[in-house]
Length: 452
Image (cartoon, rainbow, N blue to C red; front, top):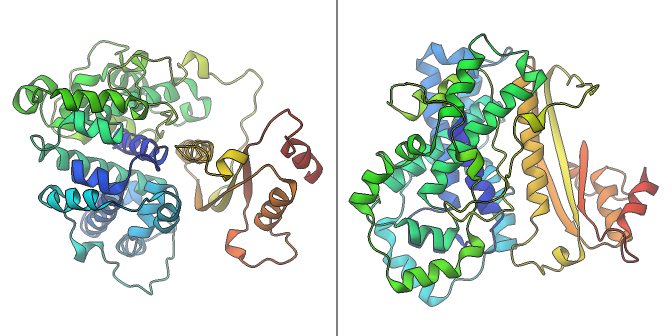
């Protein structure tokens, strides 16, 4: 479950970093799904879990925290809607993403989209609706539940692609989106390595591991591409290739090669197995090493979405090894507060060029900061069983390296503006990224120092 959720987050990070380059309509035309489908699959998983919680007492200990009732969580899940899920997939509301990144479709694009409708995913509109539009949410969904929703959406994506094995070639998917089925499998493997690294290197998490820690690590380290591909494709990759792969035309190869700047990369070192294969029965995704790891720890994906992802291309390491991630000697880990802590976090990108929309890919540093924050918070929640850090909202913006605009934004987010029009954007914590740096133009460093 946690590996599926991590691979889902890798996919979302990949698509967020390519918001201007991978349009939803093009993705839907070629593959039959888009970012909106990922969000809707999360909502449908929420409805499924709500039903299961009402009928299966065994799930209570896993998903219901002290002070919560099964009815409260079930009601929250039934009223958790598309807008909630879209924020996770897009990194912002769909309306914000659409305003920043969506391009007007050409007549040719509309024609191809309409011709491809038999390929498109369908979603039960009745289940997507919230039970009560006026429902006042009593509690936020825990990280354990969000992990379940991401994992379920990832499995829905794999099922969607399995059902279209002959209609959605990997090369076409890679050409227009920068990822393919092989990437999904490799993200699963990379997530297994990240979980393993976290188990053996994080002193805080180690306090909460059971006696079978070594078995979990061995299972995660032995989990390889072959096993992951079988989960994604529903059969081994050689079998899938024999049944469904067709020889590429010269035109397809030309378009594929021209799109390589869009492709993702996968760290060959992390993809290699690090221990002998562990004998386990292959039944479903949840019987894989993710099940054993899920009982112990939730460690989200650490894939670097700034790298492009050429399938099977060897690149430098994108994640530290276990030896490299050991805590520094003398470092004191501060204890988070107990109970539920809700945060509004601001991420301000200071960049002349990003503010002027001069980058083809859009701002990449802001989404990377958000991904890192989510990873740290998830690690805290996995480490300390008596607390739950929840980010209610990420407030994000981009300003040029101008003192007046930086000051206006920071004062507004800190609640210190002379005219505070929107209190919902007042932040508990503000991160800044970018800035011109050490040059006559760079003002941000000195300005931040003056604010402190």
